Image 1 (tube, rainbow, N blue to C red):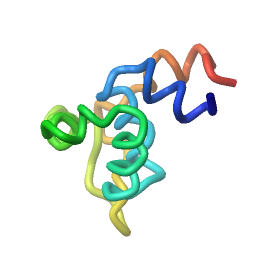
Image 2 (image 1 turned 30 degrees about the horizontal axis):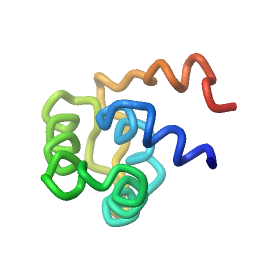
Image 3 (image 1 turned 90 degrees about the vertical axis):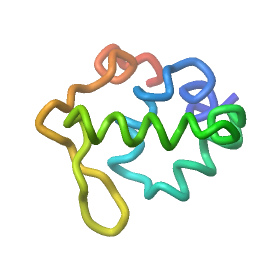
Image 4 (image 1 turned 135 degrees about the vertical axis):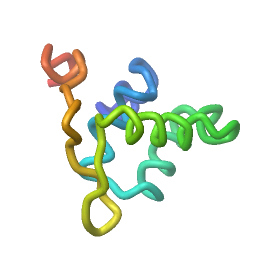
Length: 85
């Protein structure tokens, strides 16, 4: 199992989006999450999580389809604990 697969399968959707939306545009993020957690894309959970993070100020609109860190951005615990290397 590769690192991305482990993260998607083991972490919350909001934590995944908090990190990956900074480096992957929405269509690519949709593809990654859809591959390893298809139920999240089928029922619109990914879009709702993305919208919630913008509303909460965790993410802000960036350039070229990427998000930027919003004023309330905080690294999820899987990042600060360096769980996946």
